[in-house]
Amino acid sequence: MQTNSPPAQTLILDNLPNPPLADEFCPRRTRWQIDLILLAIEALDLGGSEAMLAITQDLELQSIIKNRVSLWRLRSTNPFRRAHTRRPLSILEAKALVAIACHLARRQTASIRMLLMAYQQLNEKQLSLDHHFRLSDYLERFRAHFRSRMNLKRSALAIYRSDDQLNVLAIKLLGQLLFCTGTSGMQRFWISLFDGEVA
Image (tube, rainbow, N blue to C red):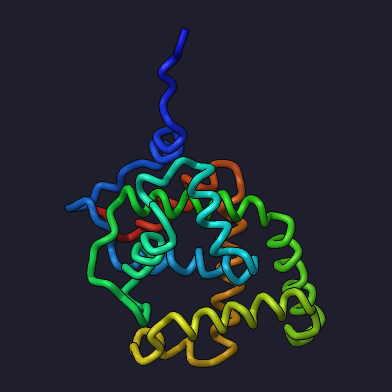
């Protein structure tokens, strides 16, 4: 006898509540934050882009993210990208991106913890961040990704023209990724994306 169990997509995305917004599209800050967390994942994992496409299939999200081009289009709704597209990002599309980010973050939990611990130890010893190869490597890749994809001519991004400020952002994103890996991490991260955006 066949049972009609709901698809994985429904189970995963239904766990994320719909924010009480005026319309069904994501605010600018939400689009920015989602793209940043995915950028950090790409800096952590050399195969990050391929992993995003693979996890899309694992989570049965192909109806939302069909291929590499559609993934790029969704990320390009971030208004601070060089190749920014003016299309909106729907709540459903944002949920799919968050599910992908959080599942990939869980796979990298050990690496994220190690990098954050290394950062703390270097700080305590007042050593520069290049004293730890893997942390330095992550930071270098993050800076390169950020500079190649973001529009640094935007006044809002002027602060990120220096290596130091990009390093601060990269470390902050590691903390957010670790937050995503915890109990109910995906739900808590999702809700945090709309802080201050809803009444």
